Length: 91
Image 1 (cartoon, rainbow, N blue to C red):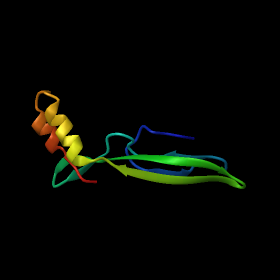
Image 2 (tube, rainbow, N blue to C red; image 1 turned 45 degrees about the vertical axis):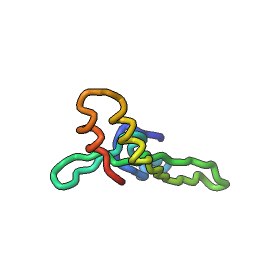
Image 3 (spheres, one colour; image 1 turned 180 degrees about the vertical axis):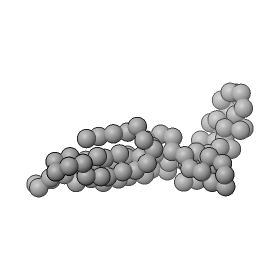
């Protein structure tokens, strides 16, 4: 049973025939650091491969180029761009 609504990476059995898999936050992971929520510069996903006796699940995490991300935000001309750029940190 695929799921992508929650931001936490999960693999949990749900009865005899079901397993709940959640890759985490595909595009906007966040974390509380020092009393403040920050955006983490990575995306998460999972690979689900059919095997002879069931399925293989592989969780993956891909880092964003943080400098390029911040530069794009600052070049966008959007209001409060500096604030948004500062919200992104290394994962």
